[in-house]
Image (cartoon, rainbow, N blue to C red; front, side, top):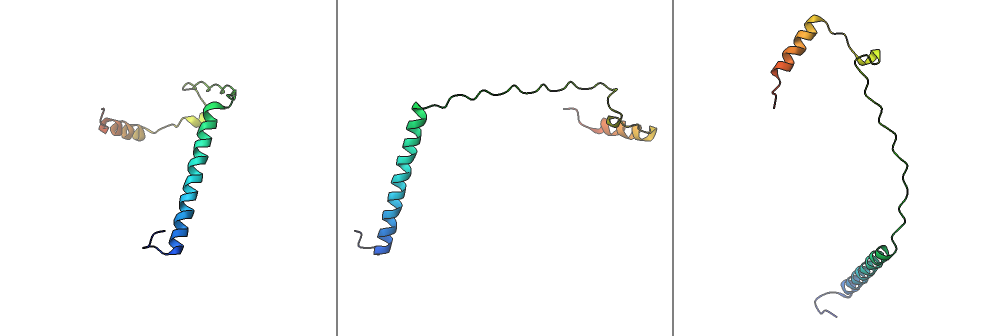
Length: 84
């Protein structure tokens, strides 16, 4: 076929071309089927409601008692943050 390549390379090229052709035909078949045979939509169950947020009187483990020094350190930290 080509004088500059070996017979093994010609066989490999032929196999590659056949594989590419099979892939293109399969892809076309998939697209053609999906165009005319759309699957029925699956009814989905409603999502559960998101629970309401608790107020400040939530679970005792959701709050931490700070010492006066910790509160002052936290306030100083908040003052150093940029407000963009």
